[in-house]
Length: 304
Image (cartoon, rainbow, N blue to C red; front, side, top):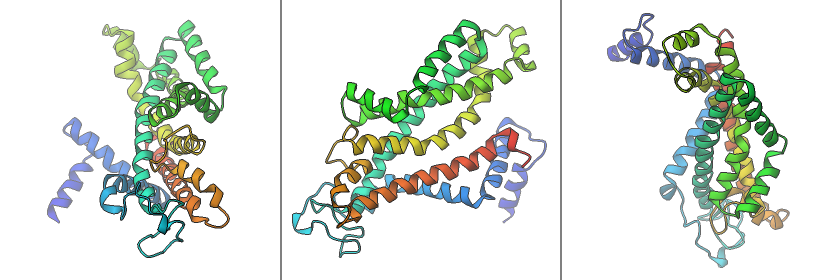
């Protein structure tokens, strides 16, 4: 108990003695604010559950997600050995959903590592340098924003061909414009700040200022947007899988599972409903978590 009290006092110290202590204290205060919101805690729990299920899928799933047994086809939920029933090939739906979480997490992670970074670079460069650079980059951004995300992703996948890598590339290419807009707006507010002027007086070039001073100020807003957009990424990936342009059978992708089960929707409703509930639950988790992160990371909401 003494150790816990000492650590809490160290985190709450109003005069931190090192940069590590200051950052740890900020993270601790952010966590305290985050956990006050029950809906945010629920969203965080759903996202953590997704991570755990994806990490321990071989130990959680009771069956091989690709193994077929036609003698066990279309069994209802709560059948012996099949918690969520089976599909038209006798494959265990629960096992396929568990392993499908890996594919969903794979797509979400790759998109979250590529689209926001590219949008952050475009937005900060456009906002800092302005002029013709801003005009050109923002008009390119507007061209991408003019098309609905799913329609543009469908067009790109139709050109690139179906497959998980091409689906990730198509989603990333359609997801970066909003991040560029957010980063540009943040850059316009900070580029005339005193610390930016001080960096120029010290001889820092434009690239160094953008990378070392402007981008860090835009990261919190981008993180909030990333978390809120993950539900849209999941739905877009599921839409591509539903149309047969994303992950290909027999891999257990949730959108593809819904597509395969739609012909049994009235009689064997569980085949399409179970993966649909998985998509809805994970999307809800990311939305709830994003709302909480916005309250913690957005400086304008610090007084609420």
